[in-house]
Image 1 (cartoon, rainbow, N blue to C red):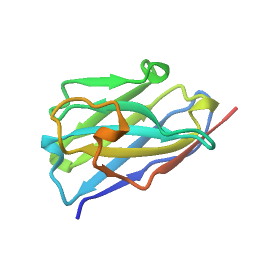
Image 2: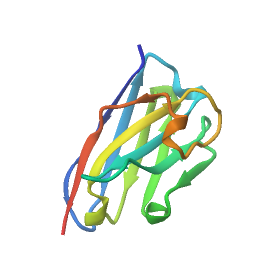
Image 3: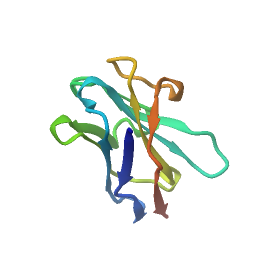
Image 4: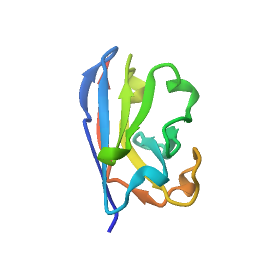
Length: 125
């Protein structure tokens, strides 16, 4: 059984930083692209960042491109999302996901097979 467990969310002031973690069990992630998505209240889930299996290729949603960084530690089966200069509009539930079909970065939620339960990030102004 594949499980993804996010952690690291919380309440932070605008301009602050957080690091989200996604620990995966039941599947070795070294062969798979991983991604982060987020969903704000009343809005659709949106793509945030993705990383290929080796960690050599990443892709970001435009609004987070210079503020967020996705990374992975395949030995620890964990993916991270480093978030800097947070803004109130970054407030959302953040989800990590595993794409078991392709070995490249993936930006569409439909490409992902497994999802975590999400972690809340709240940025106060």
